[in-house]
Length: 390
Image (cartoon, rainbow, N blue to C red; front, side, top):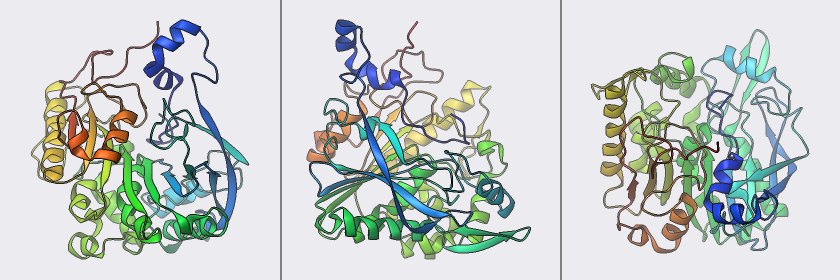
């Protein structure tokens, strides 16, 4: 996966598998099979960790009052020192500086213009928010490390994005908004659904959040030690409370709002989660604070106990709501767009059905589409990782 849990746009296999009969008939992987879209860089009034100007990437759709926002992921920087390391990277894929970012990005899957790959949003306006603040687009503060200024401006970057869209991309006329993101961008999706809804008053706003459900507690996520303590530190020095829309949550729970399991009851707009019961970035250690479960990836019994704990949380938190989750049994983190089938549907089909018909339109009339397979789950089994090409 690279980049500490970063979610890339998905693999060729994940994009092609859903249309395998067409692939076998043509034996060609071309534009008719793999649909991508070029998004162009738009500089806005914001800043990355190093102070360089923030930019987003946009492609205007034929239905230009309908918007899909996607927040890039890439773990977090849990200390000023770690953030300074990010700020010093000026490459094209930097998570702390925009200086090396390209003029355009070629995106796939949930950015595809092909309705077979992306039935809900193929003709919408796409807005890709690169990740360069280190705090899931939530902070609003300045810091320093060894005399270097650091800019924690996730909130201001979102504000600047909206201002640019109002000015140039008809956002004031928005009728539909789907907020997305993966990994650290996945929790950003959950954190900021209500923010985007407030910016697009009168529009229907929902979330489609990929791999943003993380267990709190003392676990070694991304190899950086106590994840819970690390997130608490980030919440403090980045002033993340300023960028979390739910004052009710931050007043009651503080930094725990950075974990979806605590945030869910405070989210006011509907969302559809894409997640694995066995998220590959979950670190060894406590599988949720107070759960009594210690995850050890070398011990399948503990992995199954943790996965069942995740399932139980989704069933409890989504019960009685119009929220849903596509909960697979593949050990992965993000991605696998249309590569996994649950209850006869791939994720894009499930999201499309839910968007227009709510949880009642899903195969079992239930918001939790759970593959329910034990770990390890053989590749190619429905609900598990896709079978690989020979």
